[in-house]
Image (spheres, helix red, strand yellow):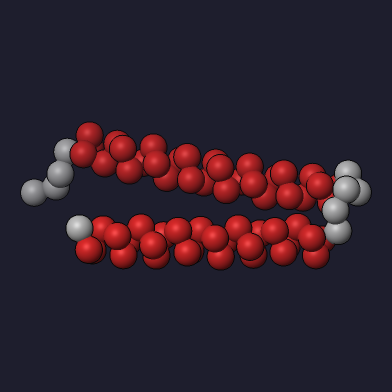
Length: 68
């Protein structure tokens, strides 16, 4: 039997937030290029550094959860 729709409401909202915030980050990054404040390489390096930091944080949090 399928789960009620309400059981997934939090997950759907979380997905909307993640997609919305990711889009916001992209818009801000490319606006910096459009305004001539940064080069494309600066923005791409910032994205890469941000993704590396996010990955490190996720791995660390998962390791802490496993040990608890």
